[in-house]
Image 1 (cartoon, rainbow, N blue to C red):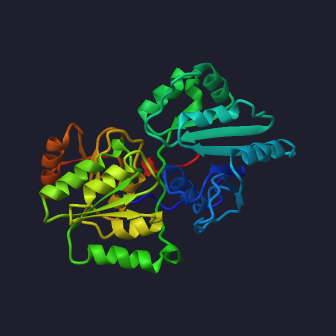
Image 2 (cartoon, one colour):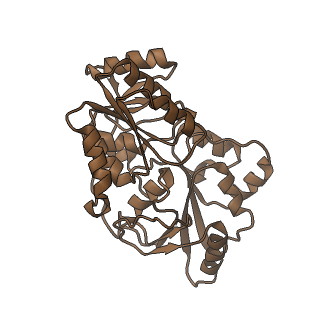
Image 3 (cartoon, rainbow, N blue to C red):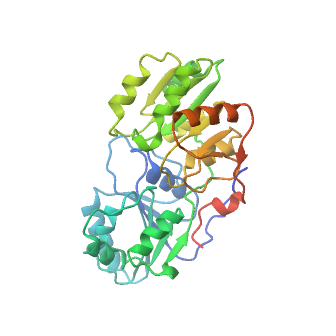
Length: 338
């Protein structure tokens, strides 16, 4: 099941997407790279400088900026143009809302999507309310995000439920031969389960490792991006388990090369916003077991995360072909600007 093909040049307005292209790899860069290739936007501003940038198959110009200070002056330049500018900001966490505090609007229209599943404020709520008041349209990935923005005083008519999924296209030019050899070597003639994400406790990667340890007939490939708070702990936990391998530094295209060859994809997050990998796995006809902490792409098998023991029972049940599949229209899960 996949979304219908997007039509190019369907919008009369020029839309500038602010975010980043891989590297780094993550929810923001994965979404923006697909948006750049969709034909729905006029330009992308990349604010995450990195010397190892991946050049995706884009259908629009890309401007590489040097961070949010450079972004600030780029927005100011837009204010002096004799036309309306539509800027779509893609960030991860709420602290990015503070960027709008000193930003004049002029004729610019601001849209915002935060890609992190757990949005909360520790203090300075007053300043966040000022910042978000300058945003004309806020895209919410979940009910929890909707409630968060409502708590900041965002009016109902500025809030729009959207999913951050766009159909996947795998350009072979972005697959590095040594990485593919590494994947093939581990996957060949084995039943491999795949999990992925940032090395944080909310991903419950330790549950997947424990399952592989207790069930050695199954192999586990963990694709990790970034350096989270449990990176070292995760590495140490995998060392004595011969049927588990951690893959670091693989881009989203190489990850999906592996995902297409997986026996199943596991997403036991205790906090999540959507899970693009869940949707990709379903599109590849790879069985998916995902936590029900947010709305999931139709066709994934859902479970409620409690503890490891209940997770192991759910995985066995799932691998035997049982479980409750999420339902819905896949086209309603595809991002658009309408």
